[in-house]
Length: 191
Image 1 (cartoon, rainbow, N blue to C red):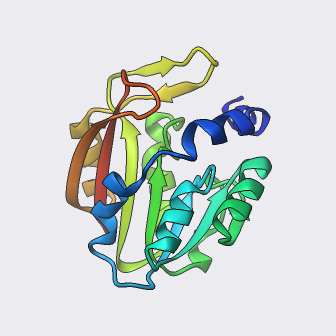
Image 2: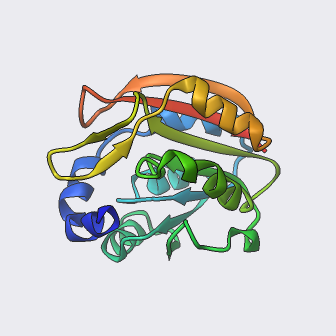
């Protein structure tokens, strides 16, 4: 149901997110990358982060499940966007310098996070970076629009990262620009 939500409500979702300034959270990653680094934006949504990364001199590629959002992201950013499902896609065909997952994993159940992160991390070179954000809390929350979000405590996330061999380089907590009640946990990880 959640995947269908983004396709059915792509225009509203795009309008809610496209004008948010990504520099406060993406600069955590980009200060570790050389100019021209190749970055995969999984769950690229409106293409906001793709455009910002491109304008900063990087080579971003988007990855999006929603056909409507993938099309918009490609037009908006003028970057390549792959339409696919990250839960089944073979990421081992890629070698990016970094991957970003800005809110892309928020609908996964607790037991799904580690195996999917392992799958996704195959797209990043050894010593490459992963930057991801997830919502803070305990259990699950449901928005008025019906979407269900899995909430995380930092200790539980940090154990998963260490267990699958990802080193934590940076951690942040930030209030959401869309919903002030949400707190986002941001992690910069190294493979």
